[in-house]
Image (tube, protein in one colour):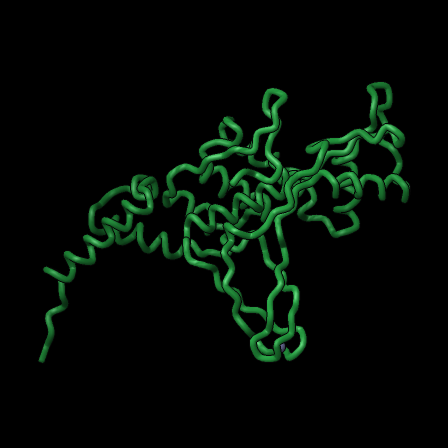
Length: 269
Ligand SMILES: [Zn+2]
């Protein structure tokens, strides 16, 4: 599947990307959230996981400047690579208030593709150029309250047309509406809701769906595995984290097997 938005490289829109083989570094980047804002965490995880986007090296500069929906799409694809089974979510029913579980296949969730003009569009009648928001924009406003964040985002996404006009256009209701409509038309979108039916009362409802489910993983499991491998083989943390998932689990199985063969606890009768 291609990116719903993509990047412009040498005047061409490119929607291709590739992940690297999965390693412990990727899992750790997903699981370690302390001290990072959500947009920074997404950038870290994707930089660790991606080989390229549109033929360009997926460094933090490029990843931060991907459209928000591209980042959400990539986090979901990554989640599906880490866990090929469906993700189970617990929902509270809006009618009977009972709880029920739904299975979500993250890689198959729908995305609205980018519209004509993506990633930026001129609105000549209003004298501005508008672009779609990126991870870098989210990062700029992450600590602000909603009203201030909206103001800042507007300043980031809307530029006056023409070199002579240095001051940005004052916000008016008409300008805001036109900007919102332009972004809505251009920007790709990842699904953040899905239709579910409560098995108890049968009520159909829309349930919210975070695009960043796999950022809720904990790093504990990876650290436990690093500990097990380091204890057994005396390898460095760095070299264990660089192993692919398959290789790491292959060695963990051998440690388990050796324990079963030689290291069983002596049983006292
Ligand atoms: Zn119900």
